[in-house]
Image (tube, rainbow, N blue to C red; front, side):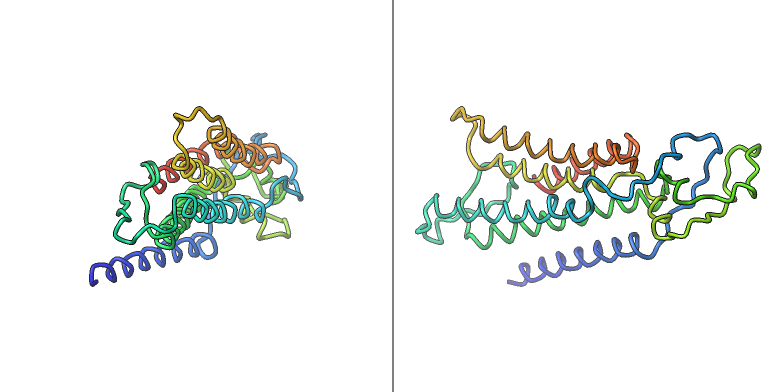
Length: 257
């Protein structure tokens, strides 16, 4: 009993720490002020006011959709596998989602899967915000938002670090300093890859059905669409998106397995 309570306390402490650090990185700590070269064409793209896939769509697809899917599938699997199983017949599943499904009480499994998923999403966000804040890479449309006073800039100095932005949207300018890695790419890949791993436990491949790999491939395609849209909207560079995909893939595997 004590070890169980202690485990819950540790889990809660980890959740609070990760949440607090995310809040500090996203709301309090400013990103590193990176300089630029006057002839750098990569940060002179126009600013797109309407994003192809805004943040609320990202939240819907990378968090809400996976949680709802996990719950629906687990409830359905519980009743299809036989709801009259005696409690002593349940097995303690400590192998993660990459292993075959073992029967457990429904609410216990729902709590485990959803809590692990949501904690992993917060950890993924922490890594993403850490990179954005520490590196401070300028987005492709940075100059369009910053509008630096070029009369005070001597381009002959090469790398310009002493400059003043004249743009009026300070929040957008601050956001334009947080390009690497792409949060849309990392969060969407984490959610979709975790979901693809979960589907691996649904039915065995030996039955010859293409449905499971079809759904799993669809998850990855959805994530790719999120990342590629950021490049199309001139909101990220290709390496921002690639790094986000890799980050989400790694953390999705760590928490899913």
